Length: 549
Image 1: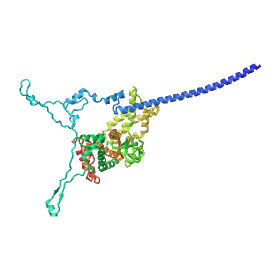
Image 2: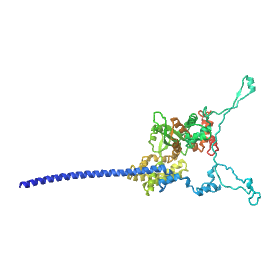
Image 3: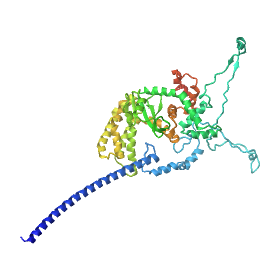
Image 4: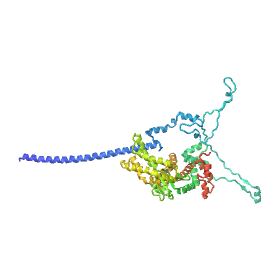
């Protein structure tokens, strides 16, 4: 073999080695590139999924902020901005026909919505306002003869508003003496009538004025600084601190014992509803002003003899607050999914089917707006059948309702849970639909507890309805100025919401309390305390919702 051939052979071997090495590098690079493409594709899919989830959240939160809050009639195919336009143009949307009927319809005629015109007026008694011809107009313009009256014709109804009136009461006390006794005893004998004890010592406050301030703030959600302007318009110059002092002092002096009575009655109830909502409280010990506190509410069940709504302020949402609030309760407790109720020593947890329905309903609404339906609608049909059954059973006694549930509700529930077990694994876990399924699965045992007793409802709407006025008021007055103010709010909300639940006028009830409590023995006399309860015959007679103020 010639040197040239040897050299070519060596070069050929070197080239082959280089080629193999290059091929290995290329293969390695291809694998790295493919892995990078795969990782990027996974990241892209994750980002797309996150975009979908965030879009769902934005649409859901936008609907919660601007859309309809009703859970009965979903807004089929209606855009959120259409609902916003409806809210801002609500006044202009009244039809001309309804306006005409509101002014001229006779008493037996009905409006478009099916309500009688007299329903608008309630218990108002009409005051006749007759427009007559003047003496100069009583002569005929054609012949000059005097006109004669044929009759009075109805023209229209109007509702007149008379602003509130404030009186300054000069409380005086008559002093009498008995000349005969004074002569016999050798000293003047004075006899004076009893004067009711004031609501607040050394204050201008009266039972009606304190009750009015409380009513305006806790029923009408009118903050104290706005009330100051109303008082000034009526000729009384007060500041916010004075009104706040009236409310706090009157509450802590007279009303707190009523809360103890409410709580003792709730502790022996077989069924309670519980809920909580955040509130900002300033000047709490060892806590910043930005810290979130909570207002807790308890409500007894629909089978209770007397409705009670009990509010209590807690500096947090910790489990210790729930344990202290429900330490002595030994019945069924209907709540949402909050874990703070899990370790109550004696209560049996019951979850709310309305919360399950809301989560599927939120998904269903978004799907309907996009022109699609799916799994959420099927879930809602199962839950809707359960609610429809409960409406038919509402007229039954508790024992009969329990037997009917075991017979008719159990098959519905079995179908629903079979549906959940079949479809939940196929849904992405962190989507709204996945969260809805997970919520139902996490609460499965508590959602079935209502089958044990006919007195247990399937929703927590009683507590939610009770706490809603507080949430509305919180949007106006924003925060409590101190823990003392938060305790005051809890007390007054308890009284006014319990009064409303017992068909009382909250203002009349508060005013009557401040008229009856000062100077009474209600703290030591159970009969006197019972007389002050909203369901007592005395309060029902004096403070009925339709009673004149």
